Image 1 (spheres, helix red, strand yellow):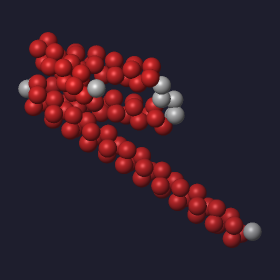
Image 2 (image 1 turned 90 degrees about the vertical axis):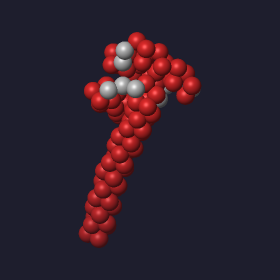
Image 3 (image 1 turned 90 degrees about the horizontal axis):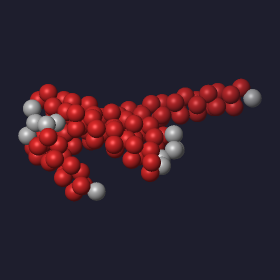
Length: 111
């Protein structure tokens, strides 16, 4: 009986370690994707460092929200659309009018 309890405890501990690793990996992927998208947009739209940091934060926030949505298994087209609209609104507040027009063209290309 004691052997089974110890085995169960070890199994639960291993599962907890695996979960932390998966969460950390997911965080790295979100940051990497936000960084790559920001760099692509920076080259395309020619924004300054302050705008770059804000765009990066917006995309990082979007990635986290998207991952959270997937983790809760409630991914609906309406929820995804709401996230995209929130991102677009945030980006619009960061960029000037000309840059935002370029951004909209880039997003249209990506779809």
